[in-house]
Structure formats: structure tokens, C-alpha cells
Length: 578
Image (cartoon, rainbow, N blue to C red; front, side, top):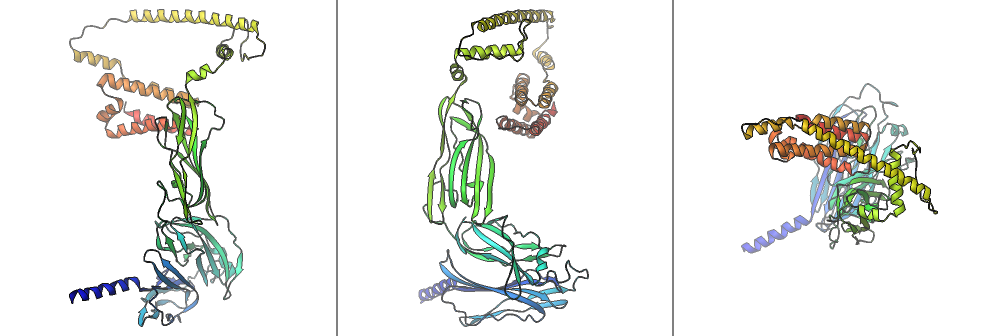
């Protein structure tokens, strides 16, 4: 007997879970003024086919309002519960006739013999503002918004276009509507379409209508989702108009998605290519730029771009994202790309490979797997580049370098360039060799003089007096070998002012080396550890961030003066403790 009762209870609970009625009303505001309309909405939702609406919806008493209304009826299937939903929506523009506290009563409806009613709503109505609105006191009277979505059944991440229309009895009212907007929602990504037809058209009931906004809406969650109401502020700080809310049926994506699928829905192409089109030689440890591009239409966003896979053949850094997409009546179209700085680490052929890319095509209702994309390059070292040059090119290159730096008393070599001709110029060749020989002799003589000067300086240094113990010796060495931060900073400022980008990064590298030598010789620590133990963990983290930032900018395609100034300020901040 008990089991039989339990079975009946479970059966009834399953029936009630599958069939239910939602009947409610809502107002966009609880406070209003005379001649300032408010939006009142009544919604009836019947879940399941076993429930029958037996009476029309009996609406509340609106005798204290001047009103206009619009209605809409929809039927769709809940993808989770697999049941049909019948929805009826009434939206009213209520203009209070007098000030005071007005109660909007309950709406009534009978379904399967049971009477349902909405909760009453109290509205506080104040007197109309004494200051007239622009274009007369009735400028915003008898206006309302209607949000329309053509496709009420879409897949998750499939874009859908929504059109926002304003309706008004007075055409001049359209001039007082500001830019429409939506509030933030985790369930949708909403982007505005820039260009659309704003022609004013005649509508029913002596109303005129105008499209005041078009949006691409991308649902991020499956189920029966409610698109939030759009808000349109009124000029002159007179509040806002709100549209109706729209429910759409968001279906889950089918099973069988390829591995690595990143929720890309639409129709796409992907490619990886060089940004530096004219670059011919790819040398080891020399940076170049590569872009991974995704183009097409759908839920196009940087998040769907496949990443470059890590490899021991090359090193990459965090990419720069370029988004050239725009919202259109067809969805989000255009191209998004990730621009990488790549540094090859081995000689020979290397393949820059991306993650596999796939997308779901909602029109064909199937997945498309484009696989991984690759870019094959041949890298060389400095010796390969040198070997590729002819003997004549090497001689010309060397003599050009020397002659550009020296003016001969016999031959004016300023701006002299030696070029390769088809017929061999013996006189020019012999003259060049004589000049090179003379320069070599002068260089040998100069180096000899420098060595002799250094030897005299060493001999002139007095011998260190004997010191009693090791502690005193360390104290003397530390006092003689202090880190000259100021000299390095002055040199960095000079390189910045000279716009010598390569020299600036080289100067910072020299500062790093001296810092490491200082920390090692004085405290037997590496420089970051020395900063942490002496000045705290925050100073050490600041230094590590600085090194990482310099490393990225050093190999960036373009480094501006503003960026150099920013890096210099960070360097000064780190080394201010010395």
C-alpha cells in the first residue's frame, strides 16, 4: 500500500514538473508623473500541451490612465525539458491622469479550471513638472519601445540580430531619444550595428515608428533565455524608456565536436603568415613577426584564434591582438589576428605550427575541422650568411666600412662606395689594398701605445698595505667596487634622447651585467635574490617585471619614444634604492 502511494506521488510530481503556468506582471518604475508614461507588462507562459487556457486574460482597470498597448504571442520548445511553451505578452504605455497613489490591479486567467492572477502593483504618481519639456509638455507622451528578434531559435554562440523600434504619436518625439543601450549580462554578448535605416514609417493606431537601434546578440548559455530590455535615455535628463524583454530558445551544440573546439560558431577561414613580407633571411636569435588570422562571420572574437604551439625550434611571446571585426545584419564579420614575435633557436628548416581550429556551421548544422596551420621557414646563422657572399662582395663590404670612417689625405673618401662591375678594376683594387694596409699599420701602432699607457698606470698604483684579517680585506674591496648606477642611468638617458633604440637596450644589458657582478662579488648572490634579501620581495618582483618588459619590447616590431621613456622610468624606480 505504501509503495502504491509513493508511486502515485512520484507520478503526480512528474506531471506537475512537466506542466506549469507562469503568470506575472511588472512595471518599469514604481514612481511616475502626470503626463510621463510608464511601461506595464503582463506575461502568460503555459508549459506543456496538457494545459488549456479556458478564458481570455482579464486585464486590470486602467481607468486612471490614458493608455496604448501592443501584444505578442510566441510558441517554442524548451530544449532541456523537451516541452512546448506558449507565451503571450501584453505591453502597455500608461499615462497617469492624476497625481496620488494608484494601484494597478491583478490580471486574471483560467487554465484547466484553475484561476491564476498577477500581483497588484502600487505606483506613486507626482504632479507634472512645471518646467515644460522640449517641444511642448507632450514631447514624450504616448511613446514606447519594441524589441524584435527575427530568429527565436538559435544555437549557443550563434549570433542573432535584434531590432529596436520606437513608436510615437508625435514625430517630434523621436528627436529627443538618445543612444539605446543594454545593461551588462553574463548570458549574452551584445554589439551594436553602426549603420541602419532610420526612416520614419507610419504604423497602426495613428503611431509612427522608427528603427533606433540594431544589435547582434550572441547567447552564451543554452536554454530558454530572456534578452534583457533595452534602455533609451531621454534628452534633458527626463528619465528613460525601456523596451520589452524577448525570450529566445537557445539550443545546445550537437555532440561530436572536434578536439580543441573553442566555441567558434559561423563560417571561418584561418591562416598563418609573415608580417614582414619582404624579409628573406631568418637568422638564429633574430626576431621576426608572424600573424595568425581568422576571418569570416559568426561569433568572431579574439578568443577563438588558435595559438602558436610551443617548440624548442623557436621562442614566442604574448601576442598583440588586432580586432578588425564589426557587427552587421549578418552577424559579426571581418578578421581578428594575433601578431607574434618569433625568435628561431636552431639552424635549418623550422615549422611554426598552430593549434587545430574547428568551427560549427549552424546553416549546415555540422562541425568543420580545418586542422593545424603551419608556416615553414629556413633559418641560417651568421656563418651561412657570410658564406653566401662572393669574395668580391666581402672585399667591397669591408673596404666600404673602412672608407666611410676615414678621410684619406690623398683621396677624399667621404660617401665613397665601391660597387661590383662586370669588368675587374685592377687600379681601384690595388688602391684599396694600399689604403687597407696603411690603416692596419696605424691600428697596430695605436694599440701598442694604448698597451704601454695601461702598463705605466698599473705600475703607478701603490701596493696595497698589509691587512690584519679577511674581514678588513672584504671591507676595503667593497668600498672600492661600488655599483655606479648613476653613470648607467645617464648613459641610458643619452641613448633615449638620441633615439638609439638598439643602444638603449644594450646599455640596459650592461647595467644588468654590472648588477650581477656587484651582487655576486659582494654578497655571493644573484641580483634578484640580493634585492629580495636587502630591500624586500616587492623590489625583487619589480625588477623581474622590468626584465620581462624589456625583453618583450626589445624584440617588438616598433618601439616608440614614449615606450622608451616608460621603460627608463621603470629602471629608475628599480635602481632608486642604490
